[in-house]
Length: 223
Image (cartoon, rainbow, N blue to C red):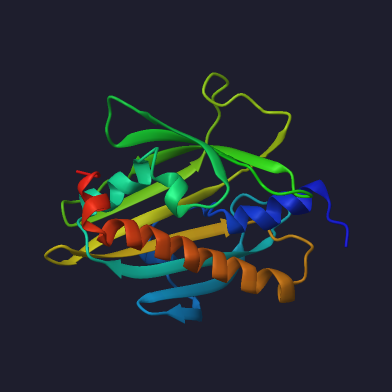
């Protein structure tokens, strides 16, 4: 089977936890259907119009929900940690976080070294903590940004265009609920092939993320 360069980008942007365009977490929860469960992890999907697509394109949105024994501060620190990213996201060979004086905003560059015949991929994202976030509820959105200094276009990689969100909510002392969401343009590969891969990779990534947060020795390094 021969896949186009564009198809490689679309297919693996799902696998590598790229994400969706988030406006309001509460307003975008309608229409999801449960497609996979594993322990306390639930994966939901729905089809919506891809933001700003012209003509309108229907795209799959995936949401992973789970709980973890950790604080919001620890969970966010893991998302920003440059060294531990390699432990919970596959195929990442380069990862850099650019913190700002305004701590509600930061940037991230990530390079994904993928096995042949798929081309390598990278992305540069802006993360922003949304207004209304509190000490027990944190809503972070992210989307593709451009920066010729931090992330010049690499001829050896396909630049991914992504957007998404993390929602962290405290449910009890040292226990939080997390919702992670992902939206990407659909590809030409039949769903019979993409569905199981997308869902399995999201589950394995979440499991690795939880494992780090719940191992005392690894968690200690996040404080």
